[in-house]
Image (cartoon, rainbow, N blue to C red; front, side, top):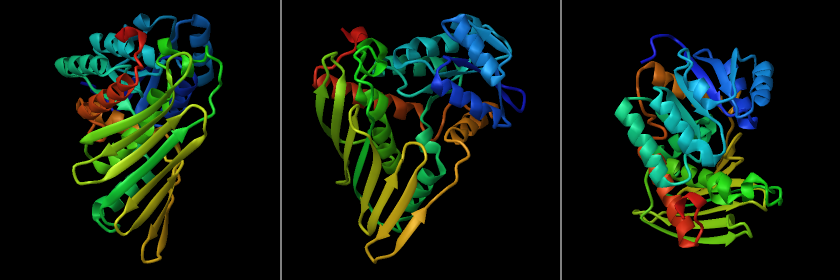
Length: 328
């Protein structure tokens, strides 16, 4: 339990996304950044100087031994998430872990079980679910004003470096379109619908390194609603179209800074625009609120949802012969 009005954070990893988190902490009254750790002292020191972090470490073990830190943000590559989370949890720290939560569903379950056993807060850092525009869209759908969802088509991709040594193409680093990019349209769709699919079919194009370059998923739900999702390492795209009984919602840049256009069948057109001071601030506020109120789980992205998403991605990968080295 945290007996104060701020959460003291430590960061594992000193890359770009860790920097964005550090900037967000500085704008959040309920959060304080106490330490950062990287595998090299030089990188940790440079990060600490850039973001005014009082403590820096060359090992994650040193970070979790700092008694002033009660919560850890895991910002390492996918392949390290499991061991980083387990280290933090075993040392009594709450954890906010970047997506994809782990490499496999089994790893996710072990981390979730440990957090529950120790009564610690654990959450997947999926900031898209916390953005005001996306929550406005969800409220509109739940109100029934635009009718039942018939189909969601959601794509997310980028033109990633084709260097086979890049992390996007490395099986050892948890590479591939599905875990890095496909998790966005998948989790976003499940957020909007509030339930899991009853059937999934998929297509996957593999690279020479064995990870997926492009993955397409077709989801069917118990009420007849369908979803068509796509993730790509070679095509830039970030759009979601929600087709409903009484109109269509088009969400551009749904991942980070979304804007939505609602076109009703009657001809009426609405825009949903929200100025977001930071794409991470709402996620961080939520995590801090839960930790400070001694809650151990998010109601926006529950741990069971995180596990089910990992289980779905396992199934899609395995159907096409895509296994990470730890699974072989």
